[in-house]
Image 1 (cartoon, rainbow, N blue to C red):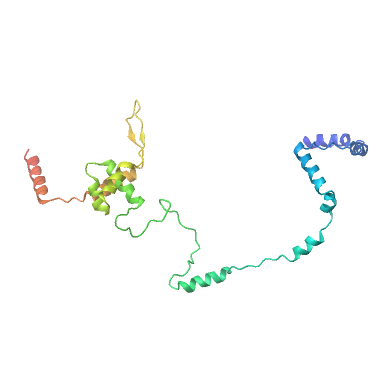
Image 2 (image 1 turned 60 degrees about the vertical axis):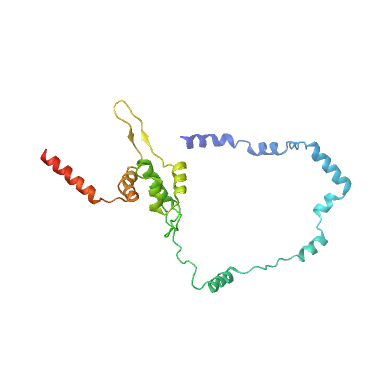
Length: 221
């Protein structure tokens, strides 16, 4: 439909097009926008200082052209190939990396160290014992954490005081009770492994004897 309308209106648009074009061309040109007073003052000041400024702008300055020919740039740096060769010669036992693959995404945005010096901790370990302390503060104390992770007890106390892990809870409704909606897998992992690891308790003979006596009493009853 649009093509038919444009085809029908084409003769109307092209009627007397040449005369209309000449009429538009012969119209007076629009006036230039007025300049700011400050620009006018600057222009007058330059014209008074250099009367032939317009000619100098258009005319080629031979002296300046000759001076530009004498300008050149020299490089005093070392090429990249020479720098690479020098690095290899300085550290023959530490060659440059050849793996150009994309670096994998780490869990916490950075690569965790393989060895952890005494008195230091990683982000993964901090999350583990902070979460374990939040779940069971009576058992997972600062002293046990400091002994297990080889940290200063004062540092652990400050960490547990000023840092917490996020926990999300679904609010209670008329039909459902308030429930934990956070990372259940991490929570179970911390409950089963990290807490037991930090506690480091083993069944003593006295505990086993007590358990046997309790079992006997239950079976007799």
